[in-house]
Image 1 (cartoon, protein in one colour):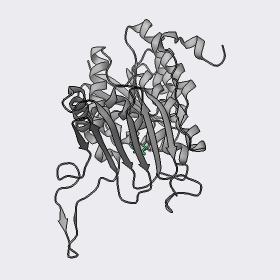
Image 2 (tube, rainbow, N blue to C red):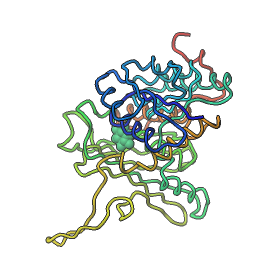
Image 3 (cartoon, rainbow, N blue to C red):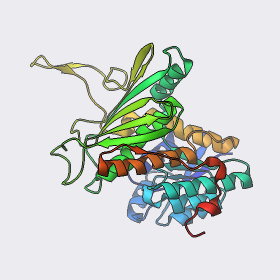
Image 4 (cartoon, helix red, strand yellow):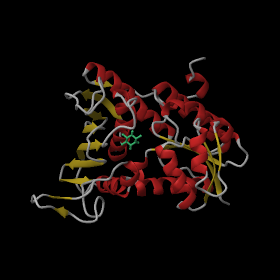
Length: 353
Ligand code: ISE
């Protein structure tokens, strides 16, 4: 039977997922969208057959005709919305970041554990879509094969042309952008990040006053590997996301401009320059990754077998981001100690116990 999906949050990502669910995902039907900006929700719903619009996320989540929920709302409202999904025993694909701080993310790990005991499967999948990108998945397979020997370093480049609004300050660069590189590092190394140091270059003149952009973050992995990350969200060029893995007997690069990924033809102009196009944003660069991620999620809802990044993956990434904020302030290396997953229980970790 078809999975009836509701989407909470109809900004850039939510609208993109609505198109995806309505037109490209097998086994699912988009039935409702909700956003505090109800007019925007209505405009989106009007683009599809049989989709209703509302303003209330919790109403959508509780609705009898919604089997599963995709949260594309801002990270600071995720905790309550994920808890509502869990209370309703509904599978939820929660866009990254899981939440905006470690404690709330940890509460969701515990709550998902309780739901799993109740319904027999974990219900939370976190939207680290790069794990579904064929290039990142292929790179992980190569590194895991041991063909190149042990992985020593990763070099991540993550550039946006510009930011959505003036609220996108230094903290969002860490918690909303760098957070993808944390999951990439965990995914490719298969280890936790045990320390982070965030360096602050002289900012671009295109950043808002006081915003540190670009940022350079260095991760230390549990096995001693190092990950360098450049995150630059006002590059004025386009969406450039690359990863180079360096191992004992070779290296591999993904995300380089090439005729298959970035452009239909290399342009050569009268000045003797050559080049191609760069994607405008993540919707084009990771269109396949998002399609594969959401299809895998819908398939997992139908099969009852969860897939993809878990609430723990969301918590671990948030914990690194939280340490990253401390390092952004101090410029020093900050060690990260994750909670012991064996001692988790929802009641024990919520602040009011
Ligand atoms: C955005 O939320 C994303 O997830 C994009 O992948 C990232 O490049 C961008 O910086 C974030 O704001």
